[in-house]
Length: 469
Picture 1: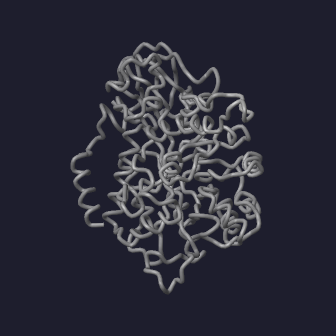
Picture 2 (picture 1 turned 45 degrees about the vertical axis):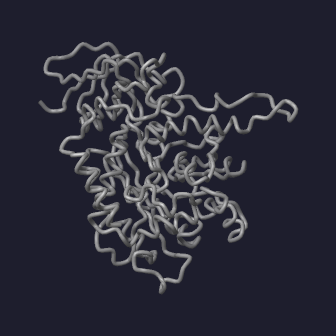
Picture 3 (picture 1 turned 135 degrees about the vertical axis):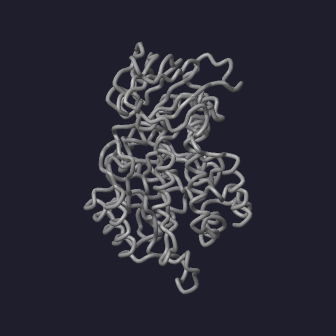
């Protein structure tokens, strides 16, 4: 039979991605018809309906990863950059290897990253690909869409790139040379016409995403990009305020904060989200909230590079849409959404606890365990991601939403003994095995396996590619 009707039965716990009283649903069953959730509750099977037994399983919305660099999946743990902060790390690792990627290694890296995400329960991936240069001999954008489609994932291409560099172009190898603004904009338009789907349950999206506002383009070019993206009906994305150097550069070059600079050149609004936003002042948080500008929170990469911990509760309280991204694997050797959400949960508590002071110093609390709940983190990683991408037909488990659903089987000892198994995937970390992952109602993984994928073969290919690089 076709995917017309499917029933998830007997789930032990369901987290929905919603706020408040709707954060959990008693279930225990979820009915899906033609890729859409049509009923939740105690539901008897219907004749001819496929049934997935979710006994002893926890059900979440499939994760929505809002910031990645998939080509970095072959650069994990690269020794020269392992103990460096952001700016020297960029030179030591991702930029040093740019010219080494060919069509084969780029495709392999994309596949590895997508598989890693899928196995953590991700149904949607937004990749900020900035590996573009004049005369590039392969179409990385097409490869990314192709690899995501093979796995059945929703894919958002954030088309990165730069029109300027801090080195003289004549001294650069071809793979490090910047594009012209016309080249960048014309390719964004080409990709939008070929791939972009405007529907709230789109399988393919295109976003205009100059790599970094302060460094990648001139201010007027940024304004041109913002206006062109809005003309095309696509969103805007970039990195911002990952480290104190963003603050330093913005003050020296433009005599204002990074967020104020972006606002001046039309780079704030509900159709914009930035990765990181670690180093912000109070006024910047207010400006982001007032304009509805979103964040892709990347706690593991920010920790690995020593950048800090974004103040997510303050951003959310100000009205900033919050999502979670794993960032590139070259600065996050566990680039999956389970480890990322686990880190998000712990780091927000640690951040608040770090600010606790003794009574003699004017303190009033011991620690920060109230900074973020599991339900908060699930909401950020699902509904929050859908919101910043403008894909509001996904991200929550409720009637009428697309059936993007992760079903986790808690069969590892790390989950034994839990009093509340609903929190297991985030609170206990690790990687729970996938009973199934559904995207648009289609089963893209089952019994912890992906159809037609040989993990041993993929691993061998990765080891060979790393050696070649």
